[in-house]
Length: 548
Image (cartoon, rainbow, N blue to C red):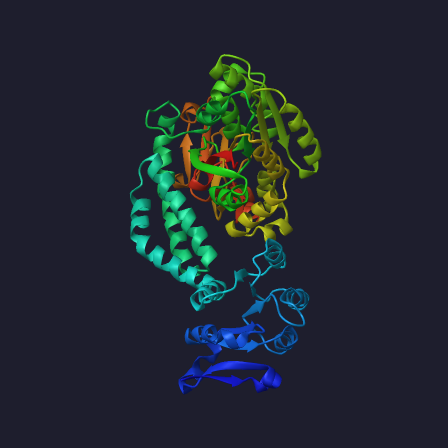
């Protein structure tokens, strides 16, 4: 049976504890969650206390704030249920003291007051939840369970859901053979990786990682056979970089300004990490596109702004294109490329304000220039933010950054941390406030590379670790790369007779035999881009509609 007995081991007659009399319960003490309920009318709450005790919780109760603080200083509690209105110290005063002494202590505030001010102050002091009396035992149990058991329940549910859909997910990954099927399989594996990671299901996460590795291998083989047909305007090709302005930006043009934002080098999982931040201000319609090859800024981002393949850009603007493979020179005309594409699509000049932002220290100037451009009717505000790309490249050169962004999960956390404090978010918040629509995308993603692949080349070969162009260029193992002597297979400008084009598959990165150990040590476990993988090629594009 249940009994209410004085908690003399704590504070004499001023508090009592509800205990089970069953001897077998002593075996479960270590697993029982401890709750302290503080309420001057605790005698009236006996049904609530018994209800919680019957569900396996240990409950101590006291009638005032001073005794509660004394208990909390002597014994750990998993949760405090705190009445807001009590003689002596009020619940909010107890909460303030507790916030100084143990800021991590979970608290649920319970009050007779329905005033917004009381609730706002309690929430401002970081209570886990807020209940208004009268409360039912079931209502209290629901909130207590969510606070104390929520993470374990979510973990169990995630495990059950994943087990139920594993065979179907495995089949989808194994049988994918169209752009849509590969994209859907990749997106589902990413979503499961994020959900299982959030639930702390490390064992099941390994199963998803295994599926992702197999999908990446099959994806590389498939792209190697299909890509040349895509860029020859095959009817069955997916949406590519060259299609974004026509399919997403063009339908938004009108009298109001429209934002076109590119977050350089953003993977799908990084996009998923910042969606909760953006959803406070926008209704988000997420989609995807395939980055063209090589998945690098000079090619993919120029294709977005121009609506053209690299060979077409070189043909129409020979003075803009050279063989340097350098972003600063090859991407110096993105604003003009966008203006030309919009004129080609609309038949008239569309006002474009273009900014390329490398540092948030430019924030004030960017805000001022964007605000000025908003006064021009029908303008396109084109913004390129390079932080994610700089972070990805800098990680290989910086031991500190390598440690901070040691894996995909850490890179997502770092991306979200940057975005929450970035000029990009501030600009987007202004867009939402003014009711302006935003098209947000990226040019390509990146992949965490583990495996070196030896290549042989002459001088003058391009330096990228995931793709190379050069004469007498050869991969030691053909299975590590797409290889072609025909630049039209990649829609690249002609580079002369004897030039070979290599694009890395899966998570390989290219090394020369003369610098094998140096490059292996330096670039293994680096985030790189330029090659063929779902992480680099299947990337997000979204319509952001301001919340009214």
